[in-house]
Length: 234
Image: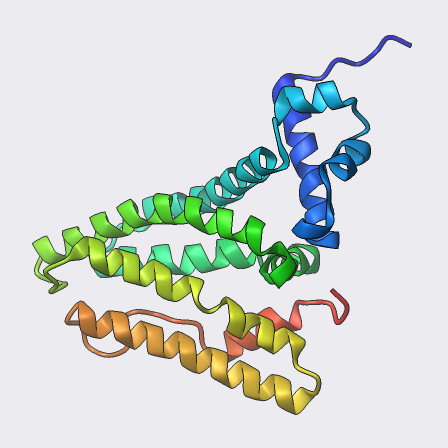
C-alpha cells in the first residue's frame, strides 16, 4: 500500500496530542525526550524537525492549550451585547468553563492531572501564555467600564492583572477538594473553595467600586457539580 503522507499541521498536532497524554499520565518530570520520540513512533530526526527540545514541545503545548481556551472566551464575549459589567462576567464565566473543560470526565481528569506538582512546569508555561492573552482583554473591558462610569479604578491594567492572578490561585483549593480522604473532608474542601471564589468576587467588586455580588462567582452547587463529574480514580 502507498505510504500515507499527512499534512504537516496534522502531523504536528498528533505529536502534541501524544506528548500531552504522556505528560498527563506520568508527569512532566518523568517523561524524557527519548520517551516522547519512542511514543510518537518517529525517528529522532523527524521529531527534531518539529521540536528542537522537550522544552520547545512544552512551549508549543502551552500555547495551543491557552489559545484553544481563549478562543471560547472570545466567542462568549462576542455573543454578549450587555454593558461592560455583563461582558466582564461573561468573560470570567467562559474562562473558568474553558479551563475546567466540564464537557466530560476525561477532560476534567486531564485538567486535574495538569494541576499536579509533577506537571507544574507544563502548567506554568500555560499560565504565562494565558496571562499574555487575558490581560489585554480584561484591561480593555475594565477601561470601557471606567469610561462608561460603571467601574471606578485608576489602574485598569492592574485590576486586569489582579483578576487573572486570583483565578490562577484557586488551583490548590481545587486539588484539595479532589484529594479529600472522606466525604466530610470533601464537603469542607468544597466549602473552602466556594468561599474563596466568593472572596475573589467581592475583592473585584470593591476595587471596581461595584455593589457586593456584582461579579458572578461559582456557587456551592456549581462546585459540587464540577467535582461530581470527576471519576473517583484519576
